Image (cartoon, rainbow, N blue to C red; front, side, top):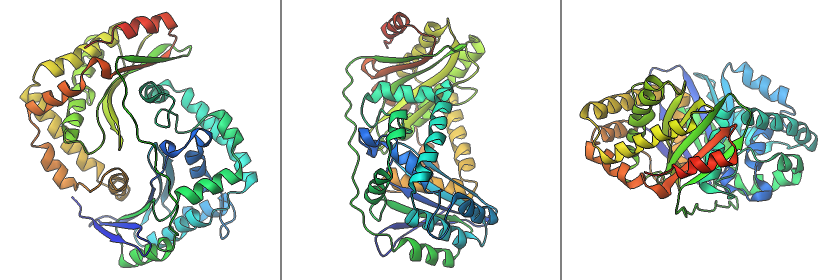
Length: 424
């Protein structure tokens, strides 16, 4: 496992250094504390669109080809991502090339031009990206679920935004949002892998000059659900994609680790309860999975599956029965031990490469008040008991916490009958 060192640049930007012995790559990850939950309705989708525009050219590297060619010469991997609560930019390169990568990243994040012509051209790209998600029910059902959970609020809006907003954005919108959300108050720099002192100096030089921004925090999620809820999107598909969730709690809760272990027992592996009951015994689904999604101010546990068009009720019934069972009966010691070994093994695999390690610390820098070291997390998960699993299950498995999202050929009356089934 790896040890980190946290430094502070001249402008108070955190610099996280995670040296790794025996690796031949290094990663620079720039995390920005902004995302779709930080937007208002006219801005919805702007965080994601802005992420695209950082790859469109700077004063020193005037266009996409020039910029990407310099990155390609380094022989590494580079990309960016936008979520509800953070945006990230990373470059992974061979040992000895990180300072060059930092120069390019710094240029992108401080001197991008945001040209109007490029913005207009990129609108078509992003609309096609939106179409891709909407044409993939397995992916899009997660968006439908979050709208079901959080409604017409920033937490419930799709990260990519709407076609209307995408078409309406102007250069002035990007400049305003960039100046407000990107700066010393919202940026964290993470270097991991085969890093050198010269890489740390380069990061200080480039990112220590970023000005302090008038950063705007997001609206906190307010949990107001008092009864089960359901949301459907009609689509002429050959199967129904559904996600059945219960509200939980935010990152950092005392029962967070027990919740994640519960999700593994329910549907986190091929030996999990729902994989066996929905797929192996009932033959209702090819894919089925349960997972816990935790944000800084809210969270949920969801089971997702693709089932035959006429078997939605049967699938929902099976999932609900497993939810009831895990809240009312102790899991076996064998199940618990298997879940611990699985989580421990996945933790090791999650931290094998420099970009994985950078991601581990980067997400924690945004979502947590303090870091949890991998070794400490592994130690904590070994202490989880049967009673811990049952206690967290009893806490969350309540009728008022239930939310069902569906994509497929489902009529309104079918949704109403499914909603009536949502009882624990």
